[in-house]
Image 1 (cartoon, one colour):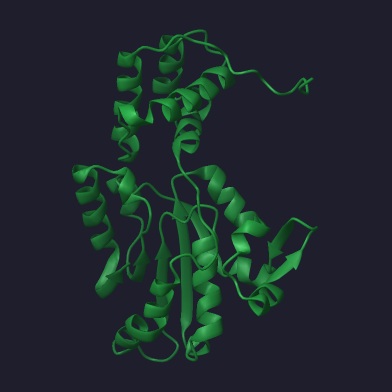
Image 2 (tube, one colour):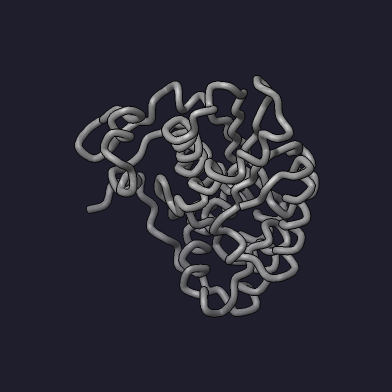
Length: 256
């Protein structure tokens, strides 16, 4: 028998028009585009939110959503984001950062100046922490500059997990053993916690790539890592995101 605190997903009839309205709402808010091929994915997450809000119909839930009662927009966005990641993912870009990008950036810097790096979306933190570890392990100039690393995401649950810095063993699958030993402490046989010093070196914030007001808060980055998110956008959303990211860069900065 399931524990009493676990809610059974409420069976509520949802029409194709209901799904279209929901997807249009999400698109306007996040830039994420969902089509009929994702209907099972949409239905499952919608049913979870209908249950969580004790709504008795889609119309009732949508009214709750539009009024943003109990921050329901945030909860819905969290439910629809994908957080598949691990440490040192696509490490060819990390290698490029150290072997090429930073050499060029240093031509415009003096010793002690800030080098600002932004990971968006950062999901549960593996990417910005990977950037920090890679710099400490592979860049001899790391102590000569003030390295600022910011990780941002639209998913507030993912950001909380990133700030907590607790990971399962699967997230570590690409890390060399000596890196795991140096930057993680084992909690049990299945989980590790990232070193507090490393955890404090990354600032985590909420940001929406297609919201101009959100993005206006972020400026003067030397390198922006924006990976594995634009596949969920259509061409119009990608253009908005690209323009917003461009405005966040210092002249001569790079977007990965």
